Amino acid sequence: MSISSRVELNIIHLTPMNLRVSSEAQDIAAVLEESLSNDTRENGTEQPAYAFTECVSLRSDDEAKLEPLSQFGRAYHPDDILIFHVTVTEPENVAYLIDLYTYSSRACQEEPPRHVGYHYILPNLLKKSEGQLDLPVTCASKHRPLGMMRVEYLKMNLKTSYVRHWNPKWKGLEIGHRGSGTSFKSKDGNLIRENTIASLKKACAHGADMVEFDVQLSKDLVPVIYHDFSVYVCLKRKKQIDTNDMLELPMGELTLEQLNNLKVYHVEEGKSREPRFFDEDLEEHQPFPTLAKALEAIDPHVGFNVEVKWSMRYSDGTRETNYVTDKNLYVDCILDVVLNHAGNRRIVFSCFDPDICTMLRFKQNLYPVMFLTCGDTAKYPKYYDPRCNSHGNAIKNACAMELLGIVGNSEDLLRKQESIQQTIDNGLIIFCWGEENNCSNTIRHLKNLGLHAIIYDKMDVFSTKERKENIFLLEARESEKEILQNLHEEKKKDILDKLASDNGIKDL
Image 1 (spheres, one colour):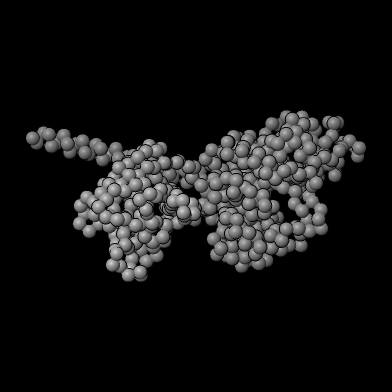
Image 2 (cartoon, helix red, strand yellow):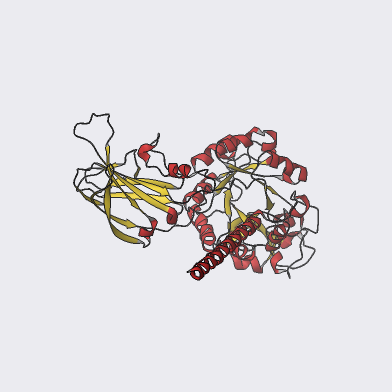
């Protein structure tokens, strides 16, 4: 930025201005108030909700570091290079007010600078990705030309970030646990196998707002959907299995091809030697669907709660499994698939490991992350990391690492219900998981307590929804209806304008 004027300038301030008139604004004064320059605000460092502005000076004797603007802006020198870094949500609806200030030679030390001039940069001037603008500066007191200003700009279009986004309307969402529920703890022999495409689709068909499933890597680093860390492999295909017919292996030691081609049994089937499913001919019922396949096959309106599985360390030093992959490689492989295949689907990551949560949060800036916790419970073994073993510690970790919120254990939350409001008071979103959720009355109770989402089995049995439809699909329909209504109104206006114009011509 360079300036040519008849007065000596000391300070430059840049203010983003929202040009969108809110439908909720009571009058035009409310709109103008939102876009006032910061020197008229009581708190001059306050950032508008739709924008964030920082500035850095590249003078050799100053530290080159982006910092938020002070009330009146940033000091400017003739040989200086000032770079303003502005992040906005709707660039097509944002203009920029540049204010120029100077200090009077007779001013006291406590006296604020004098407002010398200003210029507005409207969004239509910033159509290209980069450019140079020569702008006239208007005198602040007499509103006549004061000088010229040259601004060079670079515009970057970024994807919308949802890392801390949660619509206030999204309360009491119903999430299908492993799709249609855990299939190896239930005595119901008609259940669909958990964590399969068929299980996910069944939950969707009964109105699930989101489906929750577990993701881990095969040996060849393909993200697959499966809960347990080990499997039983059998080379003999028969209904009755002998004790020596099975071998337990870490799931991560088998490639995707091996998982698909070998006769693989769930841990519960392997321990009992009693196969539960004989569905080899049903493609969507097969275990180990890839994450990419799920993103492709499931209705895009249905949200995904992707639980990233990781071998947790217990308080006694042992692990859930000793087969582990490098953490960075593990997280990167999962993120690559989501970023390349998710499209516009709403996705929330979660994990019991707090460090995995941190990596998921800071390795991308698109999808929110939630910290899974057991809380204070005797039902599950304690973890080595203290962040995992109490709801209070989970809140602190989620706030510190800029996570969306917490997925708490219902056993703990129902016993200490004040933890729910404590989470919300800290600006966090709260889901819950646990066997206690498999009851319609409990689901209703948790919704009344303010839970944003409840994860449970058997969406077709326990759902409390009067209308078995996905909330995001309903929102899409309402949005489409509103768009069509607006188009209808615009078309109607065009017809009326044309008729009025034709009548005017006839009158002439």
